[in-house]
Length: 100
Image (cartoon, one colour):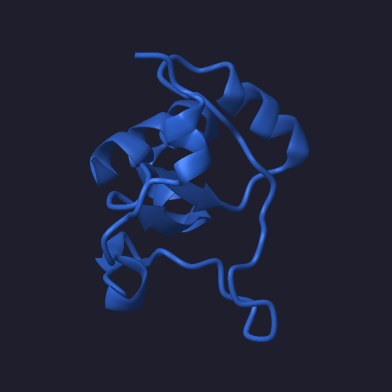
């Protein structure tokens, strides 16, 4: 999964090495996605790529510590943080909104 994140961003920034420098967080447990330092203009290009569903601006999970949550991605390596990988409970509003 992480390789797919790197390749996705690399397709726009020119190389996998540059993509690895820009990616700062990854998630493969609660959701699938990554955080990267990119311009707003580049974010529109990312949004247009195949298999990209959403692009969101940064938001902090822990504002005082400026922490985005999820696993960190440093020097091309994932640093797992167990506090962000617990089981996911579906929201009751999501369940009610689905037709079966």
